[in-house]
Every structure is written in structure tokens, then in C-alpha cells.
Length: 338
Image 1: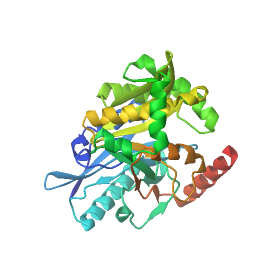
Image 2: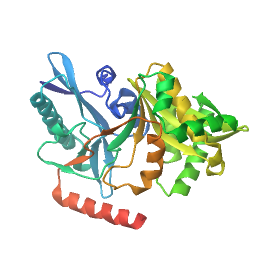
Image 3: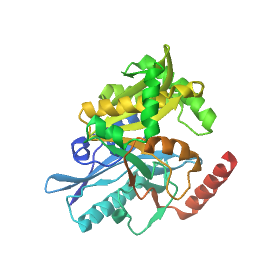
Image 4: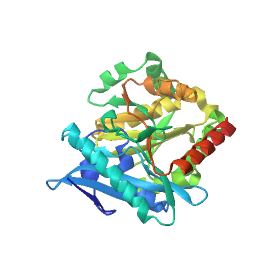
């Protein structure tokens, strides 16, 4: 078993062979997105008998006072085609190499490494549970069914709302035109203000959309009514899965039921394009820790599907003293935002 660090190595073929929710965050095109943001990143792969058995894309997030931490979103990804002992060995190898990376980043001093293991067998000694970054629970619709079956899985009210949106004149189109992103940015600002949620900056969405278009890995679904865009979703396409990553709508047009038709058309097109799964992305955890997510969780689950649960985020602490200071600062910031 050998570990390589090579920022130009291609890992998408390895990642696409299996369905793991959010594995696009470990992809080659996500690496391009990090590069566009000016992030320092490292691509690691574990090879055995000339075959890739694990990969991990991690990047550096800077903190005040010249400190930083490393983060592997929805990673590492480790093959299920090897034994559990071999999987744990690959995980340990990645964690060890990540620690070596911190010695080479002389400008910043890493306090910890944050990972998001794909299953509990990879939670090794020394990893400490922490607040989730990516959703720990997600809702997935299997697309290996005909249209009638998919409609039958829905809540009756959802089927009604889809039909109602059509009756009210809502239409849906897919776009990869850079100019159309302005509609999403306008709507996400309104949505964030209405629901009191945090969203990314306009610059973040612009860079994400640029990378999606460049790599052909997704785009925008826009719902229009009387010539006005009233809802917009960013959809990511990777491997076997289409993922509903970001969405926004105009509350003034809530009676149009546009978001229901918007999702349905994205689901139908994803199936027609040959994708096997439609990932609605995050839903409220069963422990009640995300009460503000309950509304859109009901919406997502109304389309039918199944729940996927992952372990969430874990930290490997390098500097305990600085980590205590970081944790205290995070708690204060969380309290002030309430």
C-alpha cells in the first residue's frame, strides 16, 4: 500500500464507480474550484497493486493570528472492494500524511485536520466528533423507476402542487448561460433574509457556476412565470448522481408552487440523461439539532426517496492549546449569531 501526493492526478474514474453522496466535493473539478478560489490544496491517493483504493482531497482554511486548519469535505473516499482492515490502514495512512503536510506549510500553522468519513468503520482513535460542515443526513431518490412509479412515491399534495404550477403557467428551463446566474443571486439574497440563514457570497456562486459550465458538470434550473424568474436551483452532475446543491425562490410567488415543478423537471431530466440517483442534499438531522431545516426537509421528503446517514465531521487535533482557543471563539461567534 503506497500513498502519493499529486495535485494533477486524476481521481474521477475512481470516484464515479460507486454512489457516495457528496463525492463531487472530492472530484477533479472541485479541485479546479478550489484553485479558482486561491485555496492551497493537496490531492492524495492510496495505491495497491497499481490500483487506486482511496483518495482524499483536502485544502487549507486560514484563521486569524496566522493559524489555519485542513479540511477534507466528504472525504477521504475509500474503496469497499478491500477488507475493513485494509480500509482502516488506508485511512491511517492518509491521516499520517496529512500531518506531514502541515510541516511543509510554513506560512500557516495548522491547528487540526477536519475529515468527514464515509462510514463509522473509518473513525480511528484520535478523531474527535465536531460540528458538521456538510450535511450528515441527506435525502436520495432512486431513479430506476418509470415516471408513474416516481409520481406514486410522492406525497399526494406534491403531485397536486406540480400540476397546479403548470396550470398557473410556470415553465422550467435549464441554463448554463453566465448571465442567468443573476436571477439565482437575486433570489438567494431574498431567501436568506426571509429564512434568516447564512449563504455564500456572490463571488462564491459566480466561481462555482463558472466551474460547472467549464467542466459540463451542472448548471441552473430556472422556473419562470409571466416572464419572471421566480425560483432557481443549482444542480451538480457527477458520476451516477444529480445533486440539488443550492436553491432559492421568490416568496411573493409562493402560491405558484414553482419550486415543486422545478424539482420535478430536474428529476425527470436527470433520469432521461441516465443518472441513477437524485440527491436532494441535506435534511434536518434526526437529533433535532437543525430546527430551521424542518421546512425544506418536509419539502424534499415529499418527493419520495430514502434517508442516507453518514458519521459527520471529525477533527484530528494537532495543537490542543490553540484548538481550545479556536473552539471557544467558535462558541462565542455561534452565540452572537443567535
